Image (tube, rainbow, N blue to C red; front, side, top):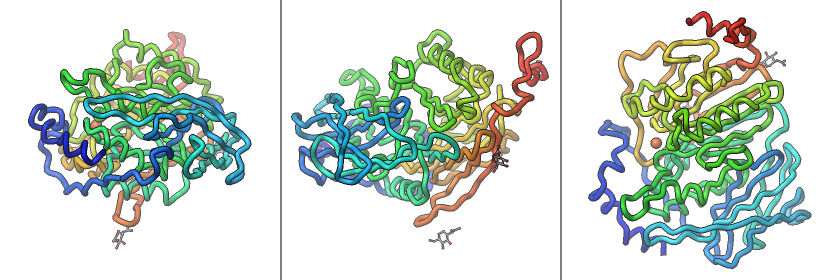
Length: 441
Ligand SMILES: *[C@@H]1O[C@H](CO)[C@@H](O)[C@H](O)[C@H]1NC(C)=O
Ligand SMILES: *[C@@H]1O[C@H](CO)[C@@H](O)[C@H](O)[C@H]1NC(C)=O
Ligand SMILES: [Fe+2]
């Protein structure tokens, strides 16, 4: 059925009609991308597939999955012992249509309250295999794995294997998930590819340009598939859109912004961000991490300037709130900047990291601008993933691991301190400005 659809709706049609839609990368010379992996459906129609979990408000986790039959139940049974489920939660389901494609039933069930650092065993929809996950810790240390622009190629498979080869607590994805690019069965294939990982640890994602999927005339609503399948805790964080939200985990406040939602000062996203930042208590969450798709700082020739208008609108909010680090994707390479505010080095600004190197089919963005900006401290066009470990309330370790076929190699790493602990960045003068800010005036 899915293969038939793939044949009936070839990519060719899209490329012929709308070549601009796929040329987001320009005409760079690239290291050869690796072949796509199509992950087939090998369970019965009634069995849950594409199972994944996400954090859903304090002490809760959302379990999401797809069934091909319409009458399967939106229930999750769970407990701390394999095969013995002493708790059951009921949720809801949805589905969507896209051109000739009709999705399966997409289920979302919130479970909890759950204990921290605890392994739970669970089964979805009263059918199919048992899965297990471990909840994040209640305090430090906590480790995040970070990779954007994943796609579903052999490179993606190797990145995911490397992520999985060392323990971590939560996966963060700064946009561009499946690279389905209008071919909806590829969203299903992506869900099956990531299931072994996304059933075990929460996957927290934000949207990239490949999630938009507006098809002129035929389908003019954006994010149909993304929003239906990758429901994130936006309601839990006071947002009105699945395209931006926040969550707290183990002393860290993580904000997921939407590069493809309105971000000007009058927008709901801007107002929500301002309110969200205002309620952060740095005693409870000393660390503040932001993810978004199109980088605000970027010395690669790919996607130059695409994050500029969002940066101009929102950078001051993040700076004033003393956000510690901003991750972005979009550019298929790795780049780490120093602390920056308004295009200048600033010890009270966030660290900026581009990590759009998960392994998608478009390949790498090989060309960096020459000479390098002094703000850019490390840049390399290779596939890989990052690890952010909050060791305690003041110190964190960031490392970037390059994919070296069967193993991952740490190629860049840095210790950094939380701005919440920096006296210089919080000393406020009589005009209400931090002293560091005054120095710039
Ligand atoms: C936090 O971790 C760093 C790095 O391991 C260490 O030097 C520092 O003493 C720790 N701080 C506290 C309060 O434990
Ligand atoms: C990278 O992989 C190659 C081939 O598998 C191996 O020989 C080499 O030792 C690896 N490099 C590192 C730094 O692990
Ligand atoms: Fe992108």
